[in-house]
Amino acid sequence: MGVLKVSLFVLVLSVLFYIYKEYKYTQKAPLPFDGRFHPDFKEVVDNFRENFYRGIETGASLSIFHEGEPLVDVWGGYADVTTKRPWTEDTLSIIFSVTKGVTALLVAVFVDKGWLDYKKSVAYYWPEFGKNGKHEITVEMLLSHQGGLSITNGTVPMQWIEEHPDKVYRFLEEQTPYWKPGTSYAYHAITYGLYVDSLLTKADPKHRRVDQIFKEEIGDKFGIEFYNGLPYDKYYRTTRYDMTPFPVVLWKTLTSLDFEPLLLIYKIMNKESIVSKAINSGTDPTHLDTAYNIPEYSKIPQSALNGYSNARNLAKLFGIIANGGKTEKGILLSEKTIRALEETLTSGTSLDGTIIPTFGRGVTMLMEDKQMIGFGHGGYGGQIAYADKQRKTGFAYVTSRLKEVRMMPLYREVKQYSDIYYKCLKKHLQNKRA
Image 1 (cartoon, rainbow, N blue to C red):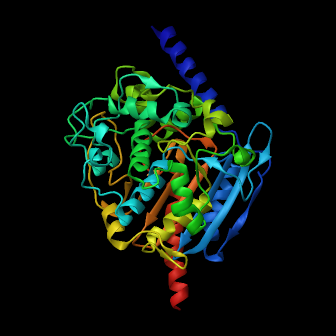
Image 2 (image 1 turned 135 degrees about the vertical axis):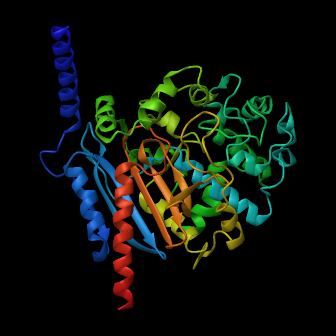
Image 3 (image 1 turned 180 degrees about the vertical axis):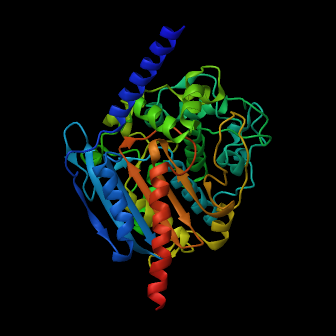
């Protein structure tokens, strides 16, 4: 028995040492780093830069707008770790589910224009949608993941979104809710984009595709560079993302006693779980570590996961909302519609058993001391963009090195940047009043 205990101890020690080596991949020299920032926020930038030196960041951009002014706009590391292509000022990166939050703002624009009503049924705008128990699903139920449509009966090729949109519509119309709509909620990881994009096209007087709608209704008007589906001629500017090695995820989990990433990995690997079924629904399953690193997938618009931008443009967009929706170029959203985005529609543990953010109308609520201070959306691997109305702040972070899997809006390092920013903002405002 003594020999067995010693052998087990040596084995565990060896595994931990291996994980430690994998995790402590400190850079031998500082990575490329550039940008601009207000001197009062140097502490934020120093912390961000230090994380590149420590190997915590390998390629990312961070931007923060306050009252329309860019206080922090920095970037560093590599857009492609393998080739050592540096991240530059105009680098774009996939933002995964942050795309959901951006598209929620687009839906809100439609509400302002009278083209959509949150309280009306989806079938009011898309009659064929109402089949098979879906007739009572409202626009806001769909946006807040309450429609029961996270799991589909079969899948369709993602290419159909571009090549055969009518086939996608028919596929969605034939689906039956997995639970009674409005009685619970679970994250519509993939299907959110399929349904919401289709609804926007159906409700649009011109029946435009979602990427064109954003460009014409928000992008061109307010100077926001965001692509729902990356055009071929922009592909050279995008990052090649890579996954954080599993031993690193395991090491961070063990040292922080934060087991949410492992719980989610378990649910994803369990083919019978709602989480696993949801991420394999809608379009044909794809390997995240390769599929969206090729232009044939990158170019397809899908609001659940296939948006491309950088921190500057996302922070600018959500910063406009944080400042009441008005700019010198016009009104992006009315105060009334912004207030509607601030309303909480779901809370508590979801049907799939994950610890999930509180949802509003297509956005997640940003909480501080159990109080809602803003809204936005997180994305796979650590991406985030949000509007803090209380402090008139638009905050965004985008990375090409995907961090551990989790459902909470702010990942560990990103929360660190956010916390330091708020501390600096307090001093900044005091200096302005002095």
